[in-house]
Image (tube, one colour):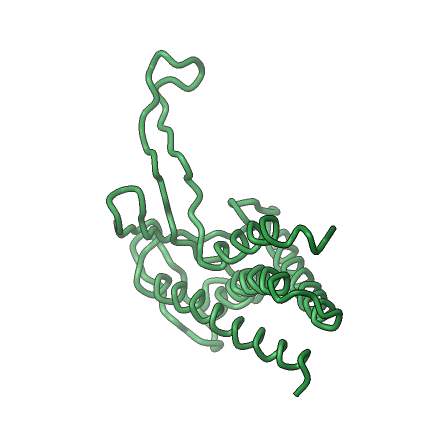
Length: 205
């Protein structure tokens, strides 16, 4: 086996492990918690809080069924392009650290793509009172193919306070520092981008 094929095998194994971690965490949360249910891990500043995101990062959405389908299709196209680019990097003999950064990003993209494409079909609806169940591909899902919601659960409201009344415009309002709720796949993408910026800039120069 040549070095390029060895790299492909190593990448495939790495991606399988990363995807398993992401999907196991999502399936567990989806099938054991109701919407907005929270478990406090370290006080109030680190919580496991279950929400579903029908859009992209930070809740960005394209309205309606067609908008959701468009987001899923965009995810598929970007994932295919990332596969192609990583394969190109392998052929060019790019440094392993560069390939590793893109593998993290690709694993995150794939993790959320699985939710978007399949979860609406294979799970019943999660509500504020009912926990979802796995229904397979025999009907009974909460949505249709390409219309699933991404499962988010990691929440770090490091500062959660009420602003002083004397502050102009925002006085008396609740303020939460770092309010996004995200998942393991999002972490892969964010860490991958930061890693590329910090350690792989010389390659692209």
